[in-house]
Length: 126
Image (cartoon, rainbow, N blue to C red; front, side, top):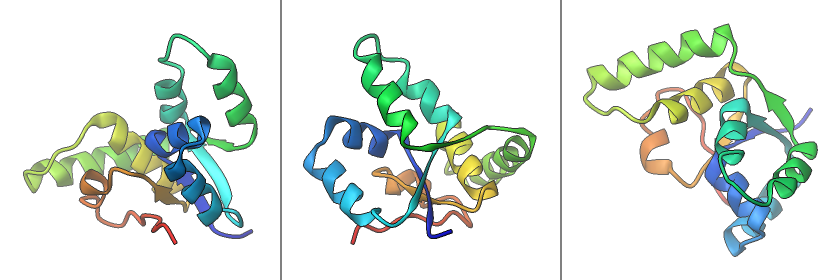
């Protein structure tokens, strides 16, 4: 198994919309095993139209559930960020924790927030 990469919702949207940023990520991740956290599935399905493109996109990814192990990790991440005075949104914490407990790097455009999470490896665009 090669590089394991979990997509943040923002990167998934760029890929779905086939934007220049999405194409750059796609080219960068050609050899990687691609995963999507179920929290991102929730975020993607919040849209009201064109849900069929999300269904097609999900067929090409492996889903990672927000399970008990991820929940415990997320609570530790949240406590650490609160202690440091650098909180971020719960959904981002859930995505990060899911990626971490499954041994994935995270592909995101939100480097500012996710870089605050100790131990989370972020994908660098090549």
